[in-house]
Image 1: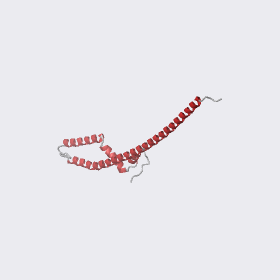
Image 2: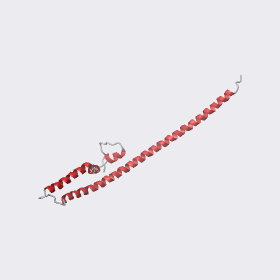
Image 3: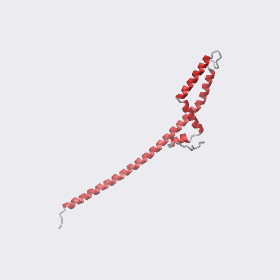
Image 4: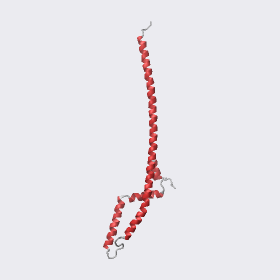
Length: 154
């Protein structure tokens, strides 16, 4: 069930459908995927792994996660288990966004094509009227020339 956002920030219909009318789960999935796909996440995860391995090497006498770092492996597996469905959700939302964008673009193109056809029809009517006026002007010129050539009758 989607609840309309009272604080709409988008005007484009695709953005309204994707962002403003998205449910809480979709918005959360978008935020999490934006974070997981960022340099910030990569740096934080790298620092955590380096600290984890460094702490275990420094505490060789009593490491809390001895080599082959089974707890670290479990943490990565848990992270992957949650990331995979979120990646699928984000992919589905991107597919929806692409489809809505394509449909909106096609609708706008249809409107533009209809406007172009109306303009062409209007231009054709104007040209037809001009052609009629040109014929009428030529006829009037012929009448004037004929009248001037005739000898005046006094």
